[in-house]
Image (cartoon, rainbow, N blue to C red; front, top):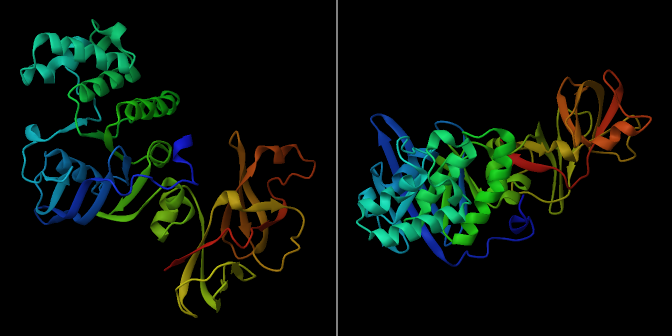
Amino acid sequence: MLENRSAATSWAGAEDEFVRVENVVKIFGDTVAVKSVNLSVQRHEFFALLGSSGCGKSTLLRMLAGFEEVTSGRIYLDNEDITDLPPYKRPVNMMFQSYALFPHMTVEANVAFGLKQEGVPKNEIHERVFEALDLVQMAGYARRKPSQLSGGQQQRVALARSLVKRPKLLLLDEPMSALDKQIRTKTQVELVKILEQVGVTCIMVTHDQEEAMTMAHRIAVMTAGQIEQCGTPYDVYAFPNSRFVAGFIGSTNLFTGEIVVDEPDHVEIGSDELSRVLHVNHGISEPLGMEVYVSIRPEQIVVSHAQPEQEKNWGHGVVSHMAWMGSYVRYQVRLDSGKVVESHMPSLTLAQADAPGVDDEVYVSWSDDSAIVLPS
């Protein structure tokens, strides 16, 4: 995650609302694609709409661009109601997933196209085009055709074409999907730096959680046409508000159980999937006896041969699978109940003489501040 998107800092522009979506609904025939979405994006914020295919994120983006009509609700940009404005009258530009570059035009001509359509003077077009190409480090490729460029270079040209018109709002539709993983990781950082330099407000649609976590100030996790949770990358990862978000953002271990102790400063949950109660060191709003889920991230779980000294928050099992993932080792442990728990241990674990291996009997354990209780 980038430094200016650290867990410790909340989004500083909360008082400067720039985009407002009010009760927006989109219906296609008998299908409700977007259900009463409310959303606020701040000026100069990089905001991500994250979700799987069919969740409504791209439809919402297209309504912001004006490519889809709103069935009901309103959309405001910089305090102006743009709901009924056609795309060409909105101070909005969209970078498409396919980049949509004209194959018969040079890089320079591609970037200049929109300005020519608007009747911008020739001298100004040349100046603005090369200003945009310099920004994305593509000025030296101005005479090339798109077919002579790599995927990453084509993406930069598409970005320059989007920025050259100086939009108030930039929309990105799966901007990295055409790039391979190594180039994608590098380009994510470069793209964020460029947009911060320009100071444009940006809304991105992606299904890639890592991409959203790396690039965005805030993330809206969408499912079934609705926003399930909205917050900083740290908030949605560390404090998911539902079973769906906990499972969609990263990976997690979910235990099903019932609240057996409910105190202001802690709760205990009994689960058939674990031989001991799960102890959580904070209070919750759910009542005693209610069925809940307990979410524990894999990096919070320790695997060892030694039985933990603590009375709670541990279980016994056998290592069913392990894999070296570079910076960490992924363990899968089948507990005595049959439930499989995943743990991510630092790679240095393998250098230890008593490092757990496949088919070893082991113990899994975690601290009482590692678990998040979610209503069922």
